[in-house]
Image (cartoon, rainbow, N blue to C red; front, side, top):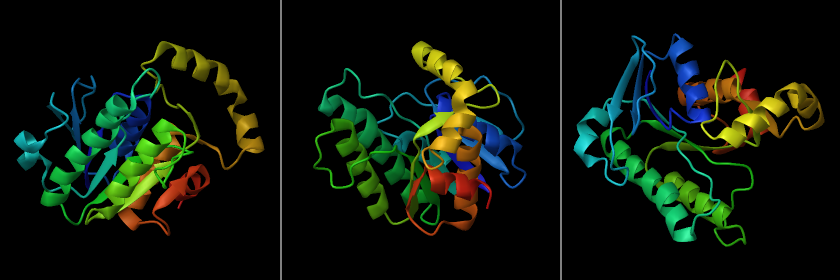
Amino acid sequence: MNVVVFGATGMVGQGVLRECLVDPEVTGVLVIGRHPTGQEHPKLREIAHTDFLDFTPIGDEMAGLDACFFCLGVSSAGLSEERYRQVTYDVTMAAATVLVERNPAMTFIYVSGVGTDSTERGRSMWARVKGRTENALLALPFQAYMFRPGYIQPMHGVRSRTPWYRLAYAIGAPLYPVLKRLFPGGVTTTEQLGRAMIAVARKGAPKRVLDSRDITAAAVS
């Protein structure tokens, strides 16, 4: 299976990339990003691209893929709805439209988040934008799945690039087993998320929108 990963330098993307590199059924991993991952691996190929609103210049490099793991995202804090929509909806759809033209049989997995608003009419700005993005992806002519994790515990040295996130995860790490017992449907790990993406890309899933409980189940299926 040949896959492409977006957002591979973020916390979620780092975890997904790791699982792709260690999985024997993933034979090739293309990473598209503004910055290099700093990793070297026989499976790994990276393309530096700066204009995330237009992927057509590298369209030919985005052919021959079986799956896309789209882990790119930003916090909505401090952003207007217009700006958040641009970096969330516009960027995602710019990549997806090029990918579907060249890989109509591919599986596209989008990391959204718990609380995403599929109606696109709720009060929460980020949830509306995420909902619009999910709906647009599900309308494209490929097999798309939306992952809506809650709390994600980083594993295997994966770290957030945001300093206060790193502190929060460091504090939360000892509490993860307790959180998992108390809220089994609301927590997962970067390892489980990556494994679940690979499993769903390979075998599909019974529903198109997966929460943390579904993600954990897919990771061991």
